[in-house]
Image (cartoon, rainbow, N blue to C red; front, side, top):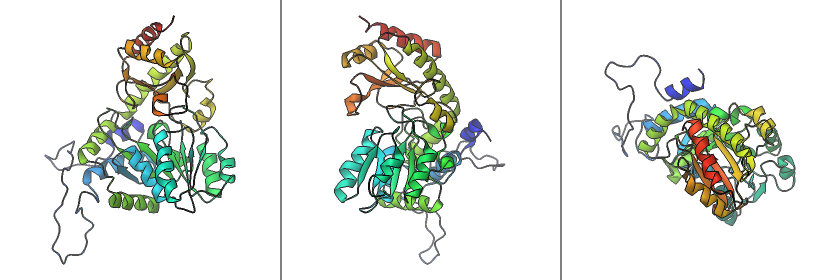
Length: 374
């Protein structure tokens, strides 16, 4: 089955169903489940909501099918990243992660892991990861984010996987910007793929959720055990909403990529804008590598305006662009990333194209940009 079919049908039980059973089963909203008698052998059935839930399993089945390995869902994308970092590093084998990726991942490494004696090193997304692996003690975990957030830089997943494995390290890839439809890191040699499903996968900006899929079922079980012990579990309702949102991911991603392309082309011609980046443009610095490993494009682009004030004027003038800090939703949104501490120009804007009509969206953005040209 192709992407659209797997998104729509993901998590559902194949084959004929009992007459009268719901086509769309609701979330299982229970913290406890009926147990057998005290002397009964463990049946493997559900017993407590922190350990497992039928709604989790539906979403995990759907995402795992797209990623290509067993999936474990978490309460947020950062909960998923934290579980990976804590499960596969220690005081002897640390973590090597992007210096220009999502800033909270670096904060977690620097402020939570490093004080416990876990070595933390960084490398630029488009840098020399093989050299970075040779420069110090071999890490236990290499974490990539490609395309990176917010810079949209790209690195060669297959090459980094080979270098990491040669050093005895596992490779995890943050696939949030690409989505499982845009990129399948496990097929490129990664051991783990992690994502914030708050973004495009759930797609409606109304849930917090994350997941990790693993190439090795042993690693998957380790992460499930970590989730149960740590308690970073998603609510059944949020999980069910993400499963519902996943059904339209294929359609949403197509429109978002169409809008991103049109915006990137239009932005390049506007005098107030510089440094437009979207890997889908054939002359983008990241295009060649992105094209080699990505299956399709997404809706995220970035560009730079002259100043903080200019960004404010632009966002204030937009009617179809929300000033919010997430991405991948139905609604187009934009965010000045330097406000969060990213090492980027003060006027850098990350824009996530939504599912509005392309002509409407481009016209609104260009009209808003015209207000800052003096």
